[in-house]
Length: 278
Image (cartoon, rainbow, N blue to C red; front, side, top):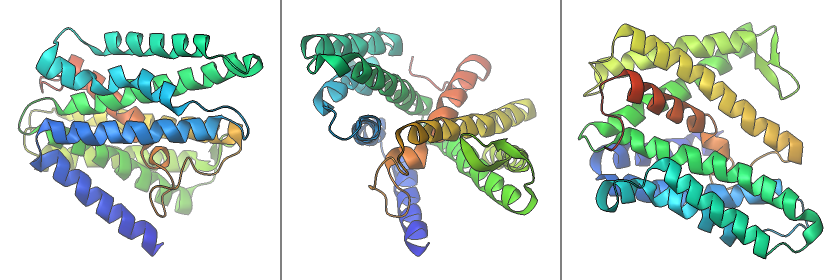
């Protein structure tokens, strides 16, 4: 437990420092590194022992998505997320086409890698784009993190002390409906605190607070359930061992990978916070 708490505090302190005190390129470097680690974890998790794993191919396919924010900001404004994903999938499909051996498992491996490509390539860059180029952009991501981890904590304690009815036993036996409700309540509270304390977020209305808090809490639960489904399907406990006491990168941020894109979409279309690079 002490190891888990210590590593969590160190990680949180580092992320907060990067979000607030470094230029966008610092966060981009962290996002790219996390994508590389997550891609390796995904392939180890989804390819049975003895199966051929091609780390280089998946990482090469993810490169256009990983570098998309930098290209759009500084070199090629037309290089949007859809273009990056299209280019990356072409690399993945062609790479598997010309390196199919063993042919009997080629489509199965391509399918697993394609799902990982979408999972990682679609979500990580949107979290970076949520920061945008404004001086207080890092606080938008801090709000998303507060909603994510606040809702997770609220769900844990509400489920532990009040939980009676299973939420989705087939995927996650310990989650309860009462815990989910507690997570939503704390998610809204976290969004409200962020709106009150964080620079640049005072423009959020109470409707925005409720939508971001409740919607983010639900998105986080779905992200957690999604990774739990994948791990159960492949019979693994953790996606990796990189973070002491927490497992792998995907174990730690599975909820954030769903909450971040949800917040990005909502802010882009409904809130005048300039959450995306233009």
